[in-house]
Image (cartoon, rainbow, N blue to C red):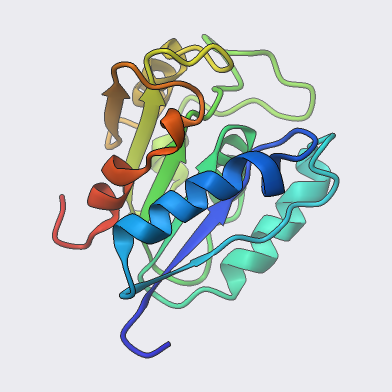
Length: 186
């Protein structure tokens, strides 16, 4: 894997999300990025009933195995849990970017949380080396597009990408995400 950049993609929640839904996102990302990138796509525990208590240890194990300069991305509730885990316990390795895709915002202005709420100073708790991108389809009927605005409020350094005509799965097209991941992009 010499000369390849690692991407860790955390799936969304729901029965069948790994094999029937988010696998299409990962395939799109792999095609758009090409051979210079390796996309790791682990299965999260009990995907049909996502829980921070179960998913955060798995996310931490996966991030601990990344090389310096890796990118972490999460779709839907996987993005929400990823960003919370990173803020709660930043990885030892340097991250190049954090990418949230259609991630619901849990906390003030978003959805109430059973296990956690994202803090108002979320951006200050994230690794300083990492660029932060928030992607949200404006036709998302699962997580309201206004949740991207909540991320922008608590992560001032985030670049928010509002995608017209795109649904919760971004129409299974992560070409804009791939462009943001490339190291020559701001």
